[in-house]
Amino acid sequence: MKWKLKAMAFRVLSAAPFGQTLYNAAQRIVMKTAFQTITPSLLRLHQYHVARFRAVVPGRALEFGGGRDLLSPLLLSQAGAEEVFVFDVARHSRPEQVNHCIRQLRFLQPGDWPEVADCGADLLKKYRIRYLAPGDARATGLADASVRFVMSTSTLEHIPAPEIRSIQRECVRIAAPGAILSHVLDYKDHFCYSDSSIGMFNFYQFSEAQWRWWNPPNHYQNRLRHGDLYALLAVPGTSVAEILPAAAERKELAGIELAPEFRARTEEDLLTHTAHIVLRRN
Image (cartoon, rainbow, N blue to C red; front, side):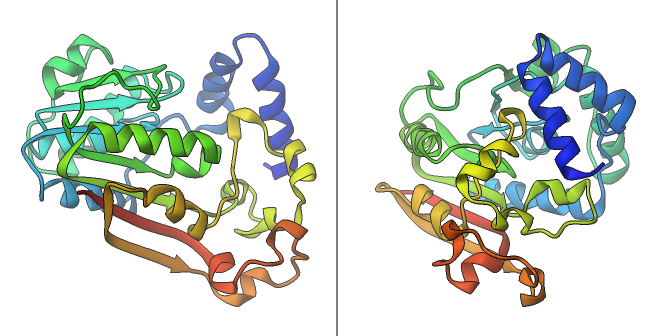
């Protein structure tokens, strides 16, 4: 689907009554994206978090932006998490999506993988996962220093900067001394995943005023760069444990006339397309 058409469709759905229900139906019927295939690269990405969690196990974990299939919470549960809190702004996950993930994990990851009847009591009973959606990661209600691990995957790029600050303050508050905060970030224009005619940095050409039109609230992209996200996450009370940025080749910027908002950026910042940022609670 061409990205501008998709952006307009998202904007219509964001304003429509029961827009989230309509979008979920479109995922199943039109886009065929409701059920995710766990590829080797996707599994490695989520196992990155699990490896960091193993350094602080046992303890409770928290993910914000849980998505549809709860892959990371399931892996954290198997890795020994006493409890996993999953916060999301909307209820994206359904039992059939979680079970689709579980059935794949049976062949990919050794262990006992029973299916669940719901994303509430049964998910909690079998996997110690509390699915809190809609839920607000800025105000979790958890006690100070009660969590040993915090994580997000391709979530922070969809949150406005002021809200990221609030979420990070809350995560630092609930993180116990020595806790790990592990984040995977995807800085690309996410429309490139469904439209091969545009590059990963397509959105650099639009001014902030122009981008507001092509940036619907239910597919929001903040366009923050690696330096911005690092500054928002590396707050007092934390220290850097690991930073792994990955950069594209210069040709990815060819033919893009940078909007004023991006002209003062360094080439390194412009070309960084993904990163892992891991912090430790002091």
